[in-house]
Amino acid sequence: MENLNYYLHDDPRMSLAWAPWFSHEYIAYFSVQAVDSLMALPPVPVKRNPQYGNKVWPVGPKHIDLYKESCRELRRLDPLWSFDYKKRNSDYADEPPSGKTIEPWKALVIYSTEPDLYPDYDLYLHKNQKITGGSHGWRHMQFRILGMTFGIAPQSFRVHTKLAALAFENGNDYWGWRYLSRCAHYLADLGHPFHVKALPGSFLIKKIFSRHDLFKIVSAMHQSYEVYVERRFREGFEPFKEALLRGAREGHDAGTDVESRLPDYIKRAEEKHNPLFYYFLDEFGRELLDAFDQMDPNSQLDAAAQTNRCSADAAKVIFKATNLPRLDYLDKITSGILFDVGRMLGMLLGRFSDRKMQEMSATLSPQGKKESIS
Ligand SMILES: [Zn+2]
Image (cartoon, rainbow, N blue to C red; front, top):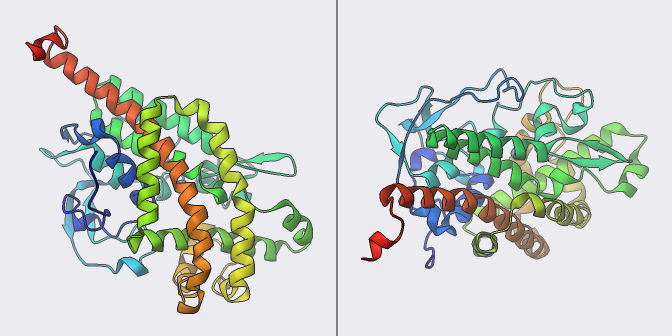
């Protein structure tokens, strides 16, 4: 690919009806731009969800498949102060619109936040799921505490690789890309330090007798990091764009399979957890924790819903003028993390799109490549 002149929110190929944009969408966007075969694929017709695997992989009771190919624009939200995936500039159709098509790369971007909406909420998956904040966290995280493992994010990734392959095999390319978009979401989560480690071991020992404090601080540090990354993307921060593009290009070229790289990938993310955790705690301290005062472990609300309300307050602290010099360290470590994430996504998405390309050229010219040369 040549130089990319856009940063998602200013890309004229992407409708403002889909904005504001969130971190997962930026990550998917830069990763797809680095895979030429993916960008070249023609649009596919929108189809109904084939509902594969609902028995083995149940979907949250509140989930509805929305079709962003058909939308009604209602408002222009301020991206810097938008923290809820559900609130966008438009309402979207809840039935597959007839006669619509979409480019695979766009589908990969606009559906990448879907796994954080309802498909993983309100399920009973495991007796220990409360420690990850409920069934959603259970499917989006995996970490160890005192020798025990919590969460099943690698399984979420694997299940969705299979669902994508199944949809393609059965001629439903549209859902092939949508399942792959979900799959890439879980893969990105596995490269996120706060999804593969909950808290530093020494910190657990220190706070073991005050569970309220522990819950609040751990959620606050995690959410602060989300707020920081998302805000950087929305500002059009160049190093993040470069890191993802470089990573995805390298991952695609490497041509190895994602599965064999997964353990090292998770381990590298895990190693970056303690430095990030303590940096937020030490550099922003009390002021940042105060932004999360509304957190309550006994609330009926899911942890994610509670933390969302605190995001705006946290952003004000982290991006306060006097705190800006402190972001340097976070920028460097995060660029490294995003390079890694891009590399895995480039590997995953490139494998699917290269295969699709080969299939298409085989159907176009049954005698193989010779025909196009003569
Ligand atoms: Zn997630």
